Amino acid sequence: MELLFEKSRAGRSCSILPACDVPYASLSAEVSRTTLPRLPALDENEISRHYNALAKRSFGVNDGFYPLGSCTMKYNPKINEETASLSGFTDIHPLQDAATVQGALEILALSEKYLCELSGMDAMTFQPAAGAHGEFAGLLLIKAYHTARKGAARTKIIVPDSAHGTNPASAAMAGFSIVNIASTEDGCVDIDALKAAVGSDTAGLMLTNPNTLGLFDPNILEITDIIHKAGGLNYYDGANLNAIVGIVRPGDMGFDVVHLNLHKTFSTPHGAGGPGAGAVGCKGPLAAFLPNPAIRNDNGSLFFDNHQTESIGRIRAFHGNFLVVVRAFTYMLSLGKEGIPQIAENAVLNANYMLARLKERFDIAPSAAYAKKIPCMHEFVISLEKIKAEKGVSALDIAKSLQDMGMHPPTMYFPLIVHEALMIEPTETESKETLDKAVDALFALLERAESEPESLKAAPRTTVIGRPDEVKAARAPIVRHNFSLESQK
Ligand SMILES: *Cc1c(COP(=O)(O)O)cnc(C)c1O
Image (tube, rainbow, N blue to C red; front, side):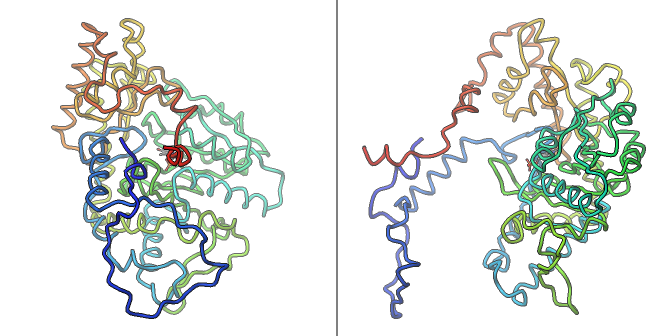
């Protein structure tokens, strides 16, 4: 497909401006640009067709079932888009006088209050632009806390092997070394391994609970207590709070810092890099370290307070992706106190319904013992290891074949502790009919894997792009248009 820059023809535009009827003002030379900005010149019709064609090439929650485990691609309520496009939110500037944007500040202050209530935290920042960014900020809080206490150097973060991949990466970026601990056969934290790992150098633990196998750790209070007794802090990866929101709170499970992916659990459409908000909440003793500015209330008027002297500093320009917070706020208000727990109830019910049907014919990870014993939370993992060994059909082949059946594939090859993994998260916003259709599609593919395995290797047949060279896409991606080539044309 041609890029907008390639379709561009000098002189075209989509605006007809009236003649200027006020005196021209010129800027001084030092602030004026010397060359024109490199923008494509197109008429409106071309632009409109271009984006429409792009939209038709992609698959989103508006197209069909999107069971991408650990990524919560749920239905995005349209009312969110209405509130997020109100001019009172879109036509303001972060450098505006606070007195003129009291409504926007109130949204930030109330969202902080509600999300602290839901997570069991005392204070929160909306600056981080993504979950991983929030993890990084949260770990800097933990670091600042230990540094301020001036005790023994606490340099290690304990991360179970079922953690989301961003956890160890963020801890390393924040300057910690990682202590990896293995899970038990049941997929939970190995208490003995944890006890052996803690010490005077433990800064904290990073945990996703429920973990990436969709399991709520039954020993959670003992786990967080072991860390606290060793002088460490507990970090909760709450990217997918939809598993528990309104039912239990990380703050009550012994966690001191949490990040919430507002773009997942709180319903902002995301993908292809954003926009996101990795809100970071913490308990009182860590609040002083949160990024500046905090929002404070001075006799009923809200203002940005930039004077927290112990702050870890800014994590991002201004106040983060404000409109993502507006969407989260709309979502919370439209669901209300009664509706929010239903998020978790439906997320867990939907996942268990699919699991109950699928386990008749698929292997459930991590083990048969687990599959028999425990209900899952918001997601679960199936392993195609057996069919791979017998018929050569891989998780990738099944995922690609699902695309031909009008479904987005589940998350593949994750968590790493499961071979030929498909991680399925139906989310709370799908009907029983949709779930049944998805299960039937997976059963049909299993049958085809038995009878005509080669046909699965040829999938997908119906998408614009079939199977890209994944190594090349990762190692030699072309992410930038080469303008010099164009001018040679
Ligand atoms: C998505 C996710 C993250 C990372 O969030 P990003 O916004 O993609 O950076 C971290 N942890 C878990 C459990 C997640 O599902």
